[in-house]
Length: 362
Image (cartoon, rainbow, N blue to C red; front, side, top):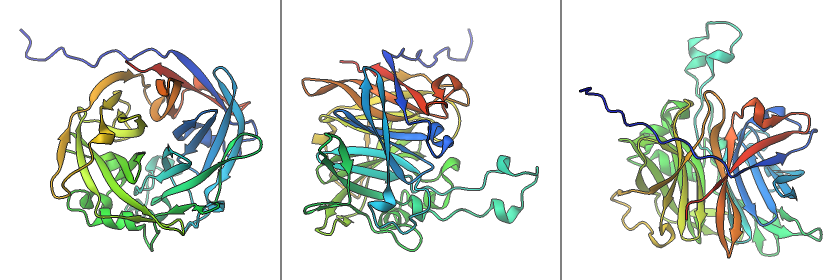
């Protein structure tokens, strides 16, 4: 008898349908089509974010499974960014009432040897980690519905004002809190793709804000950070207390995106690095009614694995989620947006990508 287990990952689910997302042939950055990392749907409006820009795209429904009429909103026009011309590495979008929350990765990066013209790269260049401040972004934007019926993010709507967690000389007040955190702090000095801090998902429940970490993974457990956020009349967002950590048992996978679904939390899980590997959707039932209790202790949670998500080798990496197909106020499906999409998912002539639509298990 073999001493090796024959246990393997379950086969991936088959999409219920595909959804065409047309961003327009005039898209100013062709790479953006390959780097959409987050989505959020509110009725007939779909917001998208790419990780190599500092902007949010809005699409509207043009057919049963077609979205288009893209319009882009630059975050520098809506927020007082410390680095208005730098990419924010956007990794999360969350709709909460009349607000759209926007999240940057807070991740460190290292120059990529494969992008150098020569086979050798200077050691001092390779060892130099880029400043993370443009990526240290946690903000919310008021949403208003115009005369055309479309939802639009704005800088100010009456007493509602756009705001963010204050950005500092080298990061933000949130980045500072994480740097001094006994569990997360050591990982803030490491590049994201090497096991360092990498935030990739946001969910909001009143003043509770949950942030999902792609990395680090602590002893095979993913990390969910929960914050209490106070919004000031100026729009500025302030941390109320220290970040609280929660561990999730997800078979060694990190968090790639979050979506609040009623009282539940949907979690897209995948590899912590740039490797191609298993991806799945988990459900944390009753998350909204299960707030963290003790900032000095870390609790282990075991969300239910409900859906296997297909992935490719070197392409088609599941990256973003959007709730879909609401009936009686409950979403019946989930849209999965892929980073590094395969050629079959791209239509560069019209600036379109294809996302997958899966049925949510009851």
